[in-house]
Length: 292
Image (cartoon, rainbow, N blue to C red; front, top):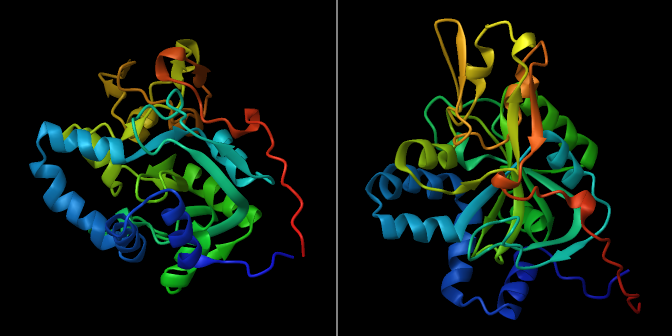
């Protein structure tokens, strides 16, 4: 048992001070975690439509995500050990906020998705964002108890798979003021997700590819067009009963593979799409004994 264990926002502030985040950044993080839907509503309706190239670059570097095929998202939820990796530019190709410092990853909180909550006629359910590990899960439960619930890994896996079945992709999110590291898995629908809107409509590069790309076995394809309708990046189009694939737009989310009833689509490792965020290949961090 830890003596005087610090939790929630107090633990968040303590870590923030240790890494040199000032009061302004700490307040920014609090506002983001406390009023996520309002924060994203402002981005969606004011920042994104009017952003200059310089402003876009700023947001991309400070607030971004990595696409996760279902298997890699499940691997994060299933972790039973801490992960201490910093400066992962090859996996998270941005200058800032690219650490994976998972502490107590079995601590998971299901949080109301700010994108869905700020959208008109949002997809249901809305409580599908997964805040992972300490201090983030405790902080969200503390400051947003009416929008957050504790979840077991099994419950979180169930939500992941249900969202996959709905055609929603999975992303790992990083933010500079959120201690400069990975803090949540979001389950993103193309009708509500502000990150997808920022990318597809306004040219922000807030989402990085998974390290995979899609491949089609044409002899299995039956020209139903379901994959084109499901693809969140517009990489698959369907015209005159023919499928067209844009390699450049493909981010390797795998939604085409789970949508296709004939298994015509598959994901393949692709160095041109970066390195996967595969926590199963990250060494175990051995904890030191703590005096009680």
